View 1 (cartoon, rainbow, N blue to C red):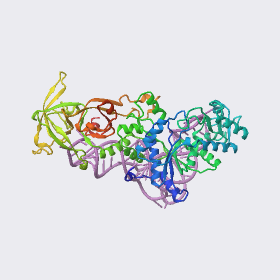
View 2 (tube, rainbow, N blue to C red):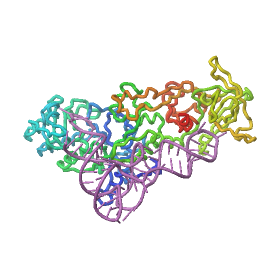
View 3 (tube, chains in turn blue, red):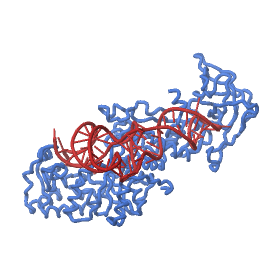
View 4 (cartoon, protein in one colour):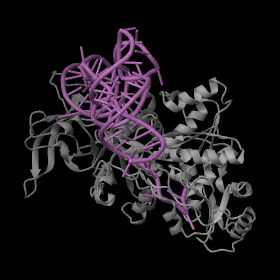
Length: 556
RNA sequence: UGGGGCGUCGCCAAGCGGUAAGGCAUCGGAUUUUGAUUCCGACAUACCCAGGUUCGAAUCCUGGCGCCCCAGCCA
């Protein structure tokens, strides 16, 4: 990450850590990003990644990448790999500090034994159903399990048998012995271990009992001497439980700090739903450019720096927040406006013939790659008698504020000449098919000598030189600001979230656009070369984001 | 009617007793061979409400109201 881009806006966590350091409560800062490898990372995770890695960097500490892989039924190596790729891409490096909850299974098992011996944990043999009934409700206390008072010896034996695979799934569970009447339901003898005869992606069949997240997470942090354990608000109720385990075990105590998770308008953020979108094929995969996943955004053409900028801009707080999509899009534009090479591309071609331009002549016009950054160099644009312009840039009967082409009107061709529309060829339905224009040869790199003003500038390509391309125009995946406000979020899916244009013509210099390279197609938006181009042997561009368009806004 | 949180401009968000930062959005206007960028300017007598303390409160106290989370052998 570029250090010059860290504006470090104030937030309560940064303040709190600074205080801990200042008053000597902590001597160093260790944070961690702890994903479960059961899906791909999304923009909400980016908020947590930027926070954890950012804070560690700011305070000269370190940030671990730790996989919370305690549920083998949902986790896969594919997700581990994808998550590592995404964290790296976002710009963060965990160095040597890559950890897995599964590496701590033996330690966690010993911790469990310690609590059983202290008579702070017991094996419960109720069914899941009975356990639920006996847990009580939000307003009524729970009732003790009939197995709650088993002897330490019996608990030790049963737990041992659980571990050895003597019992089927669901027959027993190890529970913490805390308080069945606690107003905080998390403290009503929570499960610590369950029997799961499932193959784990890293430990294989070594274990058939697996620790619950609640019995694992806090101890994992403790083992890694995480000083500030940053998580989302829903775990606040669990904090007393984590503190209880740490205290009873007598081990290093991290401090948990909760913040509000990110909600982004017009999208969903739950991994369950994202997985469903993939499996039900509402999108083409986890990296579909419409997905709020990091891999999707990457493929869409969002720069990692834009996402980091976004995470900084939205701040960190404790109130449930919904961020408008425009904030993200603005970050993307800000980044790309600076870095993206400019190019000319026509989505819906309308032929233009420059009648006064020699048919055998071709001029190679030098055009800047970035008008505000001459240091980025230039490229050559072929100018010839036959061109294509955007169909939208011509109107038979244009209103006066339409600064583009119409019968008898003049317009500047970007980087080239001013032309005037003299005649129009039409099809049987009366639609313009070819515009016959004349070129003012004195206007290359110059304004008309007679002082007349030509307000509009439009993009164009040479008909003979331009390359055909597919362009995928992406729009928001959902048409509701909050998809969950629908009975089923799938009902809020935007049927027009993808429009594929097969008629596009792009300037020849784009022939070797490498997948992932993002350009500004002038006047249209930012477009990123898609990796499918390689397999389909055809140029394919994904629209990353449009340019701001005050004209469209004015049109309504 | 249990427990835990949260309430400052349309959306985020600073502020932590001394008289409302910033960003996005919106609306004006200037420059412009991208109706882009850039640049200027406007945008909360007001901080959920009602009382109270104080010379002074968004900041402290009391009482309301509203919203979010928790009853997985998920994380």
